[in-house]
Length: 607
Image (cartoon, rainbow, N blue to C red):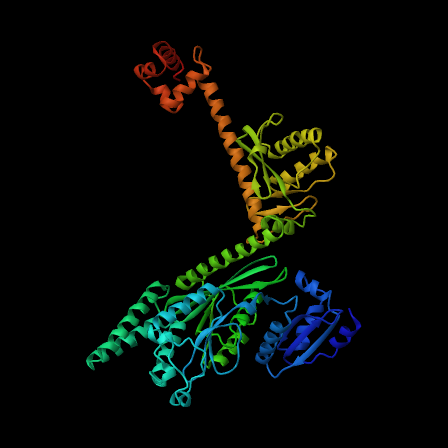
């Protein structure tokens, strides 16, 4: 341990605050918060630490710096701000956060509404972030079509209007603006319209429609038919928007749904905004993480990043995993909104279904991130990179050969070998094996025979081995294969066994199996390879059994050849149906002479 760090560990305070770990160049590589700095910081340096991420982090710590706070919520806010500013390597970081735009409603007598990427604390209202720029532009087009919000940049105020400083532009003449610059609409009426826009941006379209209907009815009763017609048109346009918003909850509550999909150093977060029971918006965040990050910490970071200063916070935040500091987060958000903010982790019901739908969106986003990454890295399928990581292989497993044994009660034992290149099946390289040296159902001996036949031949031909050899089965099948490879004098090879029951991976010279994360695309590739080998072996085995049955039951009859047997099976079906067929039916298929042979044979061998 660095002497400077060791010295500071002895003088840590029993108070809440944040800590910053620095590397030997003085750069902050991790920022964390703690309710008790002494206990939390020392926990990184215990001998019992097993987390790969923590071990990698501790190995680079050359110094640490503390900031004491009054409580844990202050520590959370400070931690969040420092992570956003410093982007330490070992923290979960939001990628491309500066590119997310907002819709801004300016604080002016006659507000403007436009997109911006700059957040200025000038009293304006901000709506977003819009992680999809097309979605934001679509929202602005909708606003401009329905509401007559000014598009000019004039600094309009009452003295300027009274002095006649401004003149109406083309927008007024084509009825896209009500002309506030010349005082043709009052400040109160204009801001009432702006408030209607805000309600739409908040997803309260249905509530707004109800209020506009009341206003329209009042206008009709007041004989203001032109105003009533304008309100009617606005209602019709808003109803089109409302009809496009999917109803996902019957309780009409406001809530956000969070779901995160991650693998390796890639992570995607999907957020569903539900207002009044309707899905009004979908947001996506891309998070940068380190290997070994846990879900609880990723969810915690995502919530801190998403709920920035100008983001609306609903009463409920729903997700599949509770954040590591859920209680502190809930208190922080509740203080900001002056209302109780609840975290909900549903196990069943409609909310659970929403979380599942949100998770599917996150998975799709993650796959897209991986696809783009794969293209940048030279068209290497991500599943191969994941498999190389999961199995700790020294080379990328571009070529995989997998073996499977198939038999039924020890009869007609066969084996299959399938080949995958760059994560895809290469069917022209598939091979079938008839087990010749083994009698009875002995999968271990059968595996030895197949491996010997395959790789002794490969040694004679090219001597080029696959990047990964895989056997369908556990420790016994793997040991049998390894034994033969060693007998053949093959030194450089990589082999594993994949057991069906728990999808455990067996390595040579390891008594216990290892498990790969169920969400890993590397494991999914292994399963695909294994299942294809099993399918190929089963198909070959069935064909072998079928041919043997034809030979022993029909072709042993004197005067009945293989072509006649095939014809009978094709036209009639099974052997039992052939035996029960009458003379006329057999004659129509194979002729009278052969029909007589068959009938006589079946009668003589009836018992």
